[in-house]
Image (tube, rainbow, N blue to C red; front, side):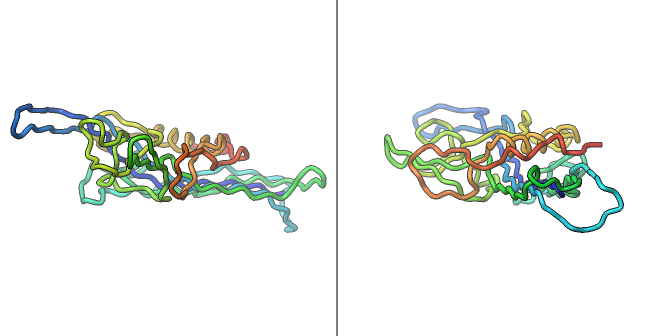
Length: 237
């Protein structure tokens, strides 16, 4: 019996803008903005398998932890840089991959073990539109947006948003939130591990929206994930 699990993540850091200075008059009022905080938009792809194999091995049992590596971008899509990326900083965008799958091998026991494959592909956000009063549409585009397209979490009926009438705006979880203007020195390896563990726990808790669902009027349900995934199998040195 060979049991494995893996998790791969795509991410982008997006801003939460807040007003910093305003002027009021009857001809040309102004409003300047600052970054109040930033957080991750995330897409996760996870797989869990139990397989029956007939190979010969030098030991009857073997187990190894799941490890990760990440490939951060050093700049955003506009060419802006925020400091050194690498082992202690995920940067403005990038992807995280399972470097070594969690692997558990032991003797197959008939009646106890069953071959199974579980897979999920989910998002931690989706988009909402309010085209007319009393009407709301929800959708997922199956992709993460670069922050220049990032939509505030309030519709244009509210003050101080960048949205035009009938534009879509984002809704979802604020993963790996950092207060203030983003710079890579705000990050560290422990926070990155916690971020990955949290996304793995969301797989276990079936806490993802489908990576691509069409326009729908009702509130979107979290349907992606499976209980067999366990973050206790993640190996951190």
